[in-house]
Image 1 (cartoon, one colour):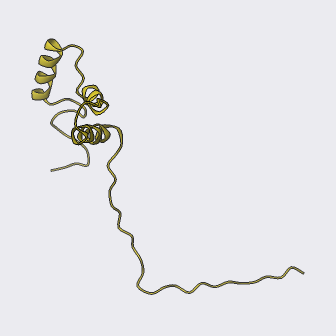
Image 2 (cartoon, one colour; image 1 turned 60 degrees about the horizontal axis):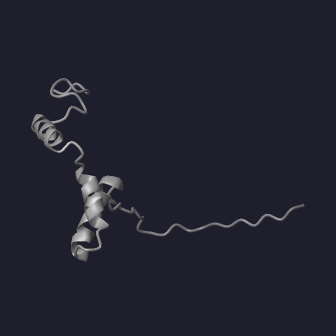
Image 3 (cartoon, helix red, strand yellow; image 1 turned 135 degrees about the vertical axis):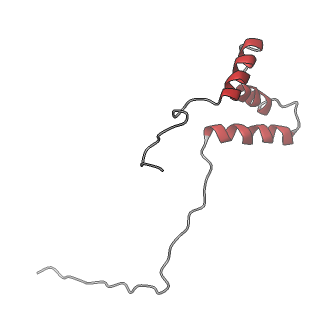
Length: 90
């Protein structure tokens, strides 16, 4: 039963074991490889098709900017009257 706090499992921020093995293999075979930088280079390569460049830009943008989410606007059914009080100085 939950006690209001984490009681088991991995600690927060611990990478998945499978992904860590893949990262280790990539870094040993390609020490300078960074997939995000590779996509940035492809996005700026004018010899590639525009659709491929656009896909690279969209993918890289997901790592840089948060995705926008829709928000629900709550509105009352009846409009509330507005009262204006005019006060004249003495």
